[in-house]
Length: 311
Image (cartoon, rainbow, N blue to C red; front, side, top):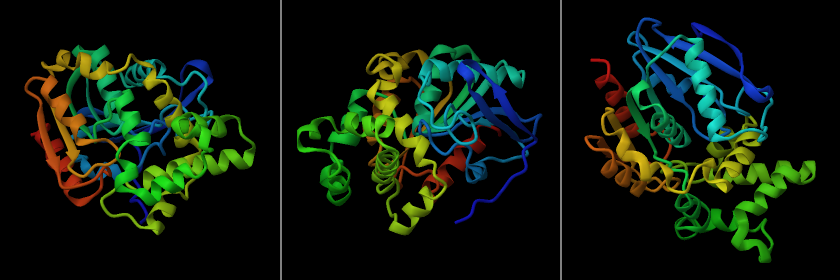
């Protein structure tokens, strides 16, 4: 399905540190409520216009950008100096570009983690948050995705993923894939990046067909998504293990709404529940959906909850 296209109010490249240039866009109403939309991945496809359907464009001033290595940002697919700390600095530069002292945060999956990381570092700058498909960047998240129940719920996808890993490396599948994606031959890099993304894409939504998986990967974004996400996973998002949950209570003065698919196999619903318990006064809603944002019940919930913040 082709995305509806939107003409940005403002767009361009922003030079940040370490030789990166980030593609940014502004949509909606420049006098509206400022929101920073943080895309998933890390290393995902970058700005996706279909996500703008969640927002009332007359009421929101939407700022978004392709993160390091993703989308139109350069250098593409680079993992060099690509860390959470660098991403937080990049957000500061984006907000400075638009002269925004305070901001509302919206993000799903890795975008939820990046939102939480930024809010923990800058709680006084956050006017509110809507986060979806909660990813906590912990060793438990890695175990769930690579070593956990996926092999019981999706044995066909699990076997396809693990068939590329030698027997003596089965307990280090993430590290093995990453080594091939970063240091293999060009043919190996292509193969392992594709298969890493295919594995996750196969259980992204409650119902997904082979054709939909292949269409979603046809833009080549797996070449950035796979090595960057695997790098972040291997390094626990460059933060102490369980950093978000250990510090989430510090966000209790911020209006936080959490949405999570009841049948999310990428990020377990327990992530949302545990985060909700730590952030006093947060709102949690489990939705009849998987991990993808545009399953009907999830899209309807995102749209409704965002509308609540601009009443």
